[in-house]
Length: 408
Image (cartoon, rainbow, N blue to C red; front, side, top):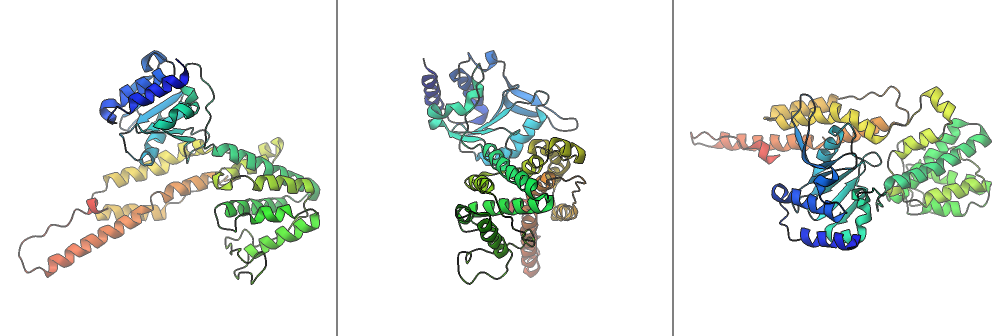
């Protein structure tokens, strides 16, 4: 029987299941391992309901653990997998030593595949059950003899490619002008411009169009310089090619010092602009920061890029975990208000911030708690409504307040 036939047999079997996490997750995982050429999960060396524990915390049970290959967490059919991202990330953190390379989150109908060492925010791939016979190469790590998986959403590959090209432009400008600050500012302005047009903050393709016209250094100086100047103008252009360019008020374009680019630099920027910048991770800033320096210079300045996974190992126990535990144990509006006030006073200091990756990820974590403000507003409104109702009632019957926790 061929690999594709075994996978199809598994898909046919999986469709007969009800999709119950408690009753069918184990047989689903066992049949999945058989489909990839094992006698079963146990024969492959994997364990079910593996206990993961940290001192002072509750024991967690992961559905399947096969070190150092994969951690699989099952959810019931129709469960929204996005709601369980934080859970599987914590499981992965707790799975040390020999932490598995890949994490699979599955609800019987869909596989979300993560590689947290490479890409934190999104899965490397999402595969529907019915598509598995033609997309199973994304799960190549499940075969007895591990093969490199082929993913369809590898944002890291785009990120590295784009960062490498921009770093080459930076180093080329540096060699010609011997002005690090000017080169860094110009390249960062180019980077923000490329991201902005791919997320529709700028007219789509405007930067690439300008680069295609840059057949001389003078043209690149004028065309790109004028674009950056317009991006710093609160008043929109009255006409011309920059009339739809909005104002960028963050200060990055406050100083515009254009560069006469060589044809080689124009080519590199053109290739970089051709990347899908909507898929580029914020970590590109760290990669670019480190790539722009030579090995000796990086060592002298301690300028070493820290991966997102390593940063999360600090952020999770110091920010995410404590605030989540406080939120889960909150019983009253007063408790919620105290948590909100603590969040508003919370400060993060990175004395050697480098590219700012740690601060960025700490901020995204903090942003995840922003709904607390809305929750407290709704709880206050519910209590105020109850108070008005109770005070206007002529009855002597005691009116208990609504279940404000349920209303959140």
